[in-house]
Structures are given as C-alpha cells and as structure tokens.
Amino acid sequence: MEESQEREEWTLVARKPYFGLPTACPICLPVYMYLKLARFPFRMDFNSTYPDSDQIPYIESGGYVAYNNESGGVIQHLKEDDILNLDTEFCSIPEWISMEAMISSWLVDAITYELWLGSDGSSAFKIYYSDLPWLIGKVLFAKQEYTVKQRLGITKENAEPREKEIYKRAKIAYGALSTRLGEQEFLFEDRPSSLDALFLGHVIFTIQALPEASVLRSSLLEHGNLIRYAEKHKNNFLDAGSSSSSVPRFPSDSSSSTPRRGPSNFSSKPKRKPKREKTEEEKTFKRRAKYFLATQVIAILLFLSVMGGYDFSEVDVGDDDEGYGYD
Image (tube, rainbow, N blue to C red; front, side, top):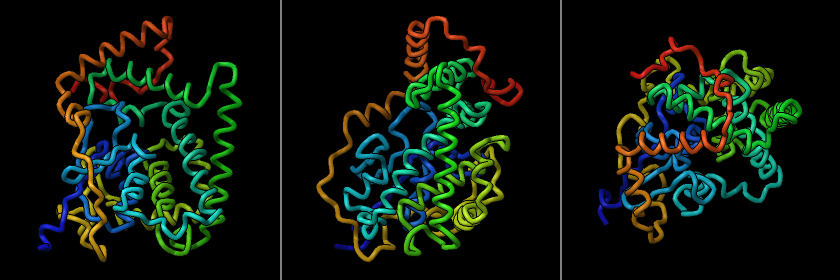
C-alpha cells in the first residue's frame, strides 16, 4: 500500500482557545497534551455551539470518531482501540493506578468546584458561554452550577464541610504528586504517560485560567517542582506570548503547524479494527446548530419550572462591561 494511502488525517475538536491556552477547557486540555506528548500529528478544530455537550472533546479521522462521553473519555477510547497507548508499561503498577485515580477524582472534583462554585465564575463564563446571548449564557451558567452541586453532593447544609474536604483532598494530591515527581521530567520512568497528560492539563489550566485569588491555585503554587514541570512542557507545546482573546500560535512542530495525514511518527500504522461509520447521532449533532437557541430556551423554561423559586441574583458572572454582551 502506498504511503499516502496509509496516512490518515486526525482532528481534535475542542472548546475554543482562551487565557493563552490552545483550548480553554479543563477536559479538552489533557487530551491535547496527551496527543502532544505522544508526538501524534493532528489538527485542531473548535466547537462553541454546544457549551453543555458532554461529547466534546472528540477526535475523528475518516469514519472513526472517539467522543468524550464514550469508553471513559477520548484517551481511554484511543487506548482501547489500539490507536494510541502511552500506558502499556504502567497499567499494572500499583502506584501509577493510585495516582491516576487521585487525579481523575480528587483533582477533577477540585477544578470543577473551583471553576463553578469556588470563584467568581468569570473564567467558566468566558470558556463556555461568552459566544451566547448574555441572558441565555447567565441562565445556563446557573443551570450548570446547580448540576455541579448535585454531582459533588453539595447542599445548603453541608456546603462548608464539603468545600473544606474538596480543597483538603486537592492539597493531599498535590503533595503526593510533588513527592512522586521530584525533579524528574515525567511522573514515571522518565517517559510520558496519560498520567502526565491529565496532570499537566490540570496544572496549566489552574495556573492560567483561574483567578489569582483561587484557593486551588494558591495550593498548587506551594509546590515549585510542579510549577517547573508544567512550565517546561508548556513551553514545548504552548506559546506563552499568545493573546488570551485569540487563537494561540503553536510551535512549528509537525503536529500543530501544518495539518498532516496520519501518525507517521510511529514505527507502524495504528492497528485499525473495523470501525463503525459515523453514527446517525453524530450526523444529527453536526446538523442541529440552527435549532440550538430554541432548544436552550426550552431547557431554560424546564429548568425554571423545576427550580421554582431559584434566586438567580446569587449568580455572579462578572459585570456587563467584561464583554458578556450580545456581540
């Protein structure tokens, strides 16, 4: 088979850039870092139409697509389909398993809490809702805030102890990961794994996207080696001079500056099991843009009917002069 036929073009669809990041989304950024650490050639595309979609991020090539809400996420999907697996040598190491669980639970909970409940909400609004009409964005923010409280098990009665528990666990996780890393380049055996991608995405997002007053950010800054670790890899893959309101310039490496076909950096072509064609669900997903505002209005009405007397005055997403208008 000719080389041109063996190559495939891969596209990572993520939420838009912001804060000098290639994608200002705490779920999308680890996937981006995973592909970068693996030197896997891909191009970026952005989808801001469905801010509440759990399918984003997703990666696609031809008839293959791996959604965030399938098979434990995009990274796990790529590993299970024998397309890209950095973890083959680590899966049976007990410490690696415990560290992965800690990042995927304690730190994910912490960044979720900080983004939606622990700060003023301005970062979350910019990432998810700044492209929507202000009123719809504000109501959807309140709806998501309510959803996050349910997911984290937060009520009026236990709000304070749950907050302390979330931050305490994050602090423990940072301490453990700092000790594990030391002054190494990577967390295990001096080579990248999905654990590095998950943690780097978390650290870089926390430093660049959360406000200076963030409790989580302050806890992270106590560990200098974690900051140096993130800074080194950030400098390899992100342009620190990028404007927070525009698409960052990427380094001129093969995986970002010029779209290429297929993972040619690998010794062999990824094993391609018979892949399903793009589903009708995915086709519908791409066609429904013109109906988005109407469906969100229905969602808002349903939400208001369920919540009854919910006080939206408690939601603070910044002043109107911060750029949350109808532009």
